[in-house]
Length: 376
Image 1: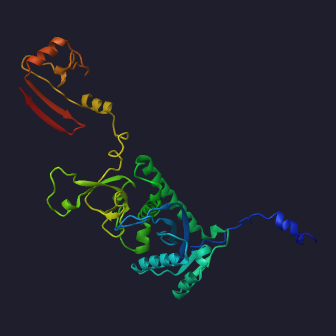
Image 2: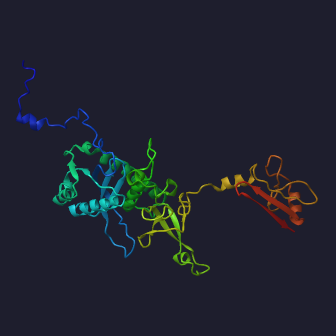
Image 3: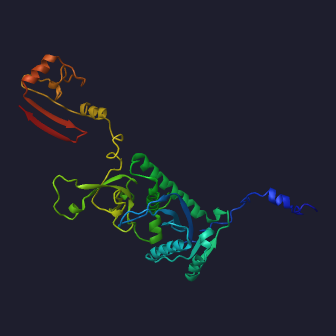
């Protein structure tokens, strides 16, 4: 009889024993009825741990930095759209929403419903904008972020990729890659995600959202933060150029352009702090040209490849059929034996120095070519 009687409320217990409510059951997925682009959008934002560098294309360098990122994730396609802001003001959030809607409208996609956190998303101007465009706006509970789980998941995925991109580049080129390039790495991670076909899928988020073929392939993406060498503008324009002047300028690859051909990357100029789309570019994705300690092979490696079994160096004259190293006559007691090891007496080496009539050939896989020279 008393089993179903609730425990009496106690003021002290309510204050002293409060804890997080356990989520006992799954109440359904928020995207279950969203079967077309724009039918459901999750919105959320993050605050940058380090102020990010702005995306400037002209003008003098300035100190403005980006502190916040707003994300818009489509439930159907998993397409991610990101914008960057200086503040958390509702006016900047509204501008972000309008930018995303304008971009979606180019592909005849209408935003029907939005799931958001609380905070700035409850601002009057934001709610009025949703009402005016007949968009269903819902919120997750305070402290119940799983109710906006799609946004939480994809923001975590994008942030993890961006952090990995940036830390890798900082490790390889610390003099030029800095933490304030986090805004560049986030945008690169977003673009990379949108053009990547997920596991078990046959189309990328970009294809699913726009219904069009992707404007970029994975092969068009380069290593974030890697050094690039951009042809001087005078030469790009086909004009004459000083014979002994450097023909290129060094820049930094920060991602693919969404407004140009897939062969046009975005290059950051460390001197001007501007970002420009470039075509005539050489990439150094292994950072070999900026860090001498990072080299593909050591000197010993090259020596081994020149004198191993795949290399064929010959020194032959009319008085003997013995093969020598090409430079053996500059070194005492050196010639090729059967095992490929240098060995011969010094008299032969001295004889070579005074009776040099040499034909030699180079046939080395590592060079990929053959060369024949005549010395007399």
